[in-house]
Every structure is written in C-alpha cells, then in structure tokens.
Amino acid sequence: MHLRAPAILVASRAHGETAAIARLMTEQYGLVAAYVAGGRGRRMRPVVIPGNRVALELSAKSDTQLPFARLELEESRAPWMTEPLPAAAIQWACTLTASALPERNPYPALHSALDALLAAICHAPSARGWLGAMVGYEALLLREMGYGAPLGDSAPPLDAPLADQFEAFRVLHRPMGRHALAGAAGDGMAARVLLGERLARMME
Picture 1 (cartoon, helix red, strand yellow):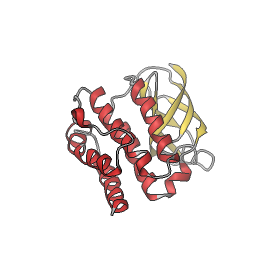
Picture 2: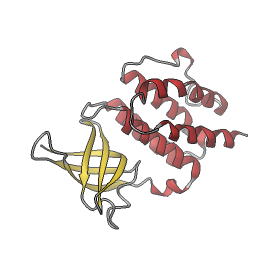
Picture 3: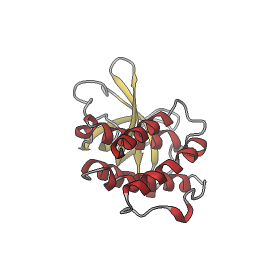
C-alpha cells in the first residue's frame, strides 16, 4: 500500500515517547489513520494540529498494518487555535469528522465541505460568516451516513441572520449525539457543547 494525497488532519493522539497516531480526511480514500514518527517532536508538532491541511504520503507493507505517514504542511490553522470561538469551531468540526466516519470510505463531498468550512472559520470576520457552513456540514454528514435530512426544508441559507443559524445549530444537537456520534469512543459531544456555549455568549 502506497498513496499520496492532500489531506486534512482531524485528530492526533500521543503514541510512545515522541510519535503520534493521526487521523486524516482525504477526498479519494476517506478517513485514514497512520503512525507519524516524531509527531510530537519540535519539528512535527506544528504540523500535527487538527484542522491543518497537509500533503500526505502513506505507506504500509500490508492492509492489516497501521500505515506510516509522512506529512508536509500546506496550510496551518494554528493561528486561530488561540482564539476561543474559532478554536472551538475547528475542534468540533475535526472531532465530528474523526469520530463519526468509518475509515477508508470515501466521502468526497464531505472532504470538500470540511475544507471550505475550515477556511470560512479562519477567514470570516465573525461567526455569521461560518456558522451556516457548520450547520450545512453537520446536515451533510448526517445525510451521507444515511440519517436523512433532520432540518428538512427549514435549513437557513448561509446569509441568514445569526440567530436563525444558531437555532438550526441547536436543533441539530440531538441527531448529532443520537446518530452521528452514537457509539463513538469518548465524549465527542463535549466539543459541540463548548462551541454552543461560546456562540451563546457571543450573542448575548
């Protein structure tokens, strides 16, 4: 097994003294997990950040072996991880993707939507510029996983007032927990709760 592809790093956890196990979203191959040697070292630490866009080179001797990954940074989201609201939004989008999707199933529409959502979070002047995209990404993920369209015809347009976008975000909370993250390890919904709290404070 050997592949090269652009990817979005959506999760990382420590492995051994300096390595990391990363999960990456690719357009053609879907979600893949890989061993990153030195992933927690000084050189690679700025690369192995959720939300970063990377060039991925993946290799494995067999389909049963955890692949080894070489990563090169293409676009960093690190500057926005110090800002509470964008950081919470990036963390939730990545947590949802890493926790909900099965590995090695391609979801090209989700890959494109996630890339666009992260770009909006980082470059829009306020949450009004990206909250509608977040709602759209959550709804698309539910549809792609076979859970229908929980918002039906009531999904607000991307330029809807912020209050309407936030209400749609609230409506999706239950299907996110009951369907998208049902059975997922850990409390992935905690990241969504944190984002909701920060959005609510912003709107007060």
